[in-house]
Length: 233
Image (spheres, rainbow, N blue to C red):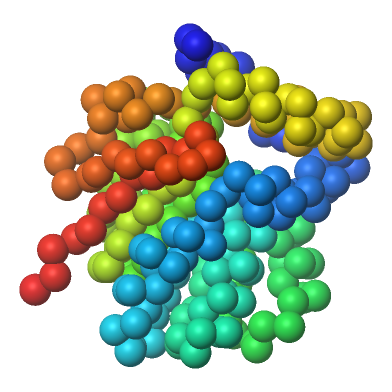
C-alpha cells in the first residue's frame, strides 16, 4: 500500500466545520481505546519510569482533544504516582476542547494542564519532562517536522520518549473503514482516519528516518512505536 503524504485531513484545515470537529474530538476516546493500546503502553513503558518514586512530569505533544493525557493522568493517580501532565497543541480549537474536558474530569487541580504551544517553544524555555509522548502525530508531519519533533523529544525527555502512530496496511484500512461505517457523516473520524492510514508509515520507512538512539517497534493492532531512552547519569 503506497504512502500518500500529500493527502490533507479535514480537521487540519482552518475552515473545518466546527461542529464536525468537536464531534471528532468527542469520538477520539472511543477510537483510541479500541486501537491505541495505551493501557499496555502505560503499564509496560510509562509506569516503570514513574515507579522511581519521585514526582514526575509527562508531556503529550499534539494532544488533540486531550483524551490520552487525561487517561494517563487518571491511571497514574489510581496507582499512587505523583504525576503532573501537560498536553500541548498548536491548534487553539483542540486546546479549547481539551480544557473543557479537563474541567469535567475528577482529577485534582494542578494535575493536568493544556497549553497552545509547540515542543520547540518548550525547548527554548529549557523545560524538561520525565516522559514525552505523542499519539497519532507522526503521520501529520513532513520530513523536516518529523526530525524536529524527534530532536525536541531528545531535548525534553529525561526518562522516556515514546511516539505511537498508525502502521499503514491495506488490512488496517479495510477493517477501520468497516468498523467506523456507523460514524460516517457524524464526524470526521472515518474520513480523516482513512486518510491517516494512507499517510502513515510502515516500520522500515521509520527506521530510515529516525536518528541514532531511537528504536522502532510494532504493536497490535497496526501500531508503530518510536522509543527513545536517554542515558541517565
